[in-house]
Length: 83
Image (cartoon, rainbow, N blue to C red; front, side):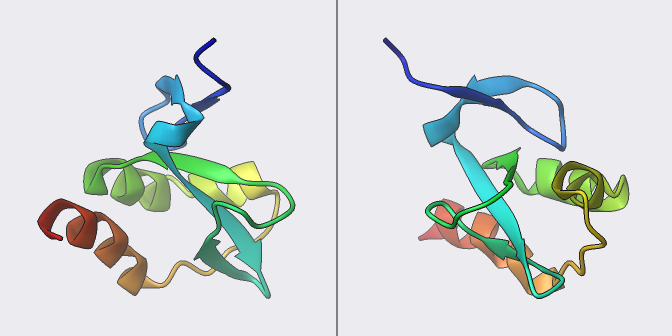
């Protein structure tokens, strides 16, 4: 058994949940939240998918809330690649 699959809100591809980055909304702001309760939105571990999701307002649609996206969240992707 390979585990649950989720869909990336940026590119739309299905992947195993462990291969994706999960986000939640807290106090109107987007936060990374692998273990946070509530509705989540997932992206591939690709900066391009994250940027596409932001540009298409996919986080707001998926999380069913107006979401403020801090540009510093992009560091999650560059730090994982470089670090």
